[in-house]
Image (tube, rainbow, N blue to C red; front, side, top):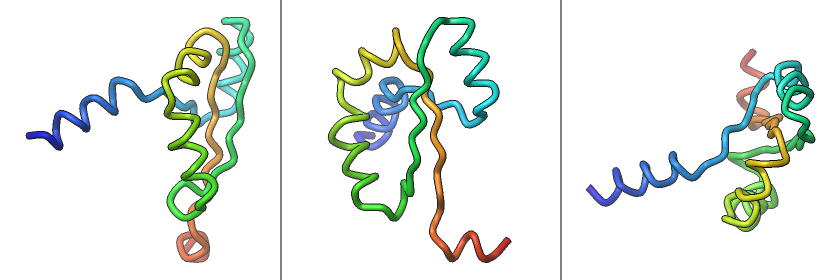
Amino acid sequence: MKFLLLLLLVALTTTKWEPDFEKAKKIALNEHKFILLNFSGSDWCGPCIMLRKDYIDSEAFQNIVKDNLVLVNADFPPEKEKSAC
């Protein structure tokens, strides 16, 4: 039960990342916001994981994002997954 509550809390507080850059450009133009493009190896890159944990998931960053930024995440999975394509 605690896990489900934690999962719900994370889902409610996590900022939406737009996967489509072209769509993000249109949103930013219409809402007069800047785009923050995050290049990440979210599941294997230590500094990327630390950046998310220490800054991107912080309440202060979330408050800045909602009024000023459209977030785009360019995630690069491990080499094993890329070579399977």
